[in-house]
Image (cartoon, rainbow, N blue to C red; front, side, top):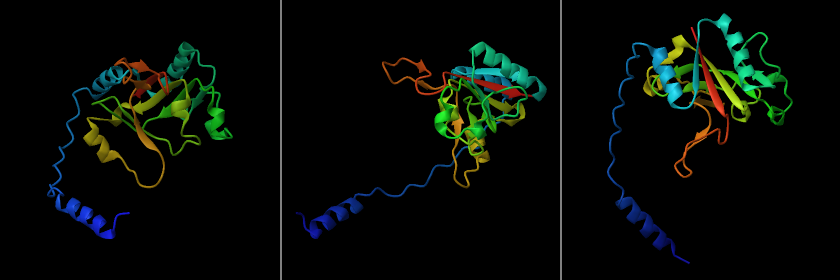
Length: 199
């Protein structure tokens, strides 16, 4: 058993070897919005395996979501977005998270999108079961065209992390490329991600 002197010798040696403090780097300012932010965002969404859909206005959204559900063959659809006639699963009424099993399509609101990488900021706190976005076979996000920012620097200026609750960036469907350097879509979550850009 080592003595307390040996312990202090080791700790003293570690403290003596500590590198000098270095000031934190200056963070760059957020970049300007592209000339066409929606087009840049859509390009990034495609690059990460998602499918962007431009929606002229909120009135056109329910029909486009129904068409997506039909194309995907989605039998159980859950929507956290107010879409008349869309969705047969009431997320707030589900008794426990196990009842999420079998949801084919989940439609969630995004607070804003990032043109740089196609990410959408999602706040799951209003949802009764936050796991719906990873349990559903397919995911659809709804974001307003006016809420697209240029890059992650601009995005972090908008993020408010006060209080508990899960908030996160979602960028395309579930994917992994760490096995044999082969990209696999839908490896451990949603098999597809459609982003409806409204306005």
